[in-house]
Length: 468
Image (cartoon, rainbow, N blue to C red):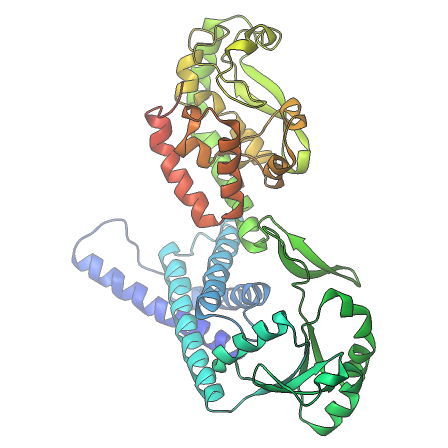
């Protein structure tokens, strides 16, 4: 597949160069400006190995070259999409830092787009071919299943529903000798777990699948070691505990294996891309908005004596603390006057919200209404303490009053905007409801969700929707 992918990527490179020149001829004929002719092909040939390496490396990284038996078409195409996007970002970054001015951006975009199209069609063809062969009884993997309980029966039904996976179950084994010879779930019980060595000598088995209760774990070790000696692949079902939110993953620390239960996003490539986008967007925004920073600074200084910026200790990932920056919208001694206003709090829980806060300076309410006071937090995003999208960062005293389920809010990096900003903002006065919105974001996180929230934030800020 790697060699075939490399050939298709190379083909996409040459097809894109031809299409780019034809596009230039068409636009020149239509007399459209600002579209330049590409250099001769030999100027770009040096990029081809880099493009192929970027594609193949990211395809390996997202797991595209692992077996496809249990993967859905959507999952396989998703791997291609992320590999293409990441490799394009990496290559574009290299071109920028190496100052490859001769590189045509439209040519590179076209190359990656056509390469993605070629690889997507290749995967569809291979998948349909392999699945058709497996349905007809070719390219099969023969399984021996250890376990006869509900979880094992569920596994058997799932395999039966997907003949395209190419698994054929030879039989079952159990701890109890009295079950030998019985038919369970449509398959014969061939013997006990202790008899696995004899069974493997008499029938064809490629893999042994252990779907057993937790109480059996000590009793299957000898059988696993025997399978290891024979070179048989062993699979152990890890759904040993019924968790409500966390998902089980297999991993390890050096050579020490773990079964990990994780309830926060673990989409490593997407999280890495999210951080790259945070850096690029915050850096760009700080440069473009620098004139506005000067204007707001003058407004703050003309309204009240004191510093332009307000600094406060906030909590970020897993309770780490950092210094958050805002344009000052209150009098200098605002925090010391908070206790006298607690009876006017309009928010339940540990957070203080008040519509007509007397501590606000002249332009303070206006700056808050349009979230202009939050702009210095772009520096926090650039430094890695915050993200563009994520739950708002709480202060440590609030976190100390969190209930256990609310502390999961700290399992993701805080941000400038989140679901609360676009769906409720200050209209929500129930603290638990606010926390539920943040947890909904964490449980359903994806880059696409971040993009949607960014677009929804724009009108909410421009029109001051929900702000006080």
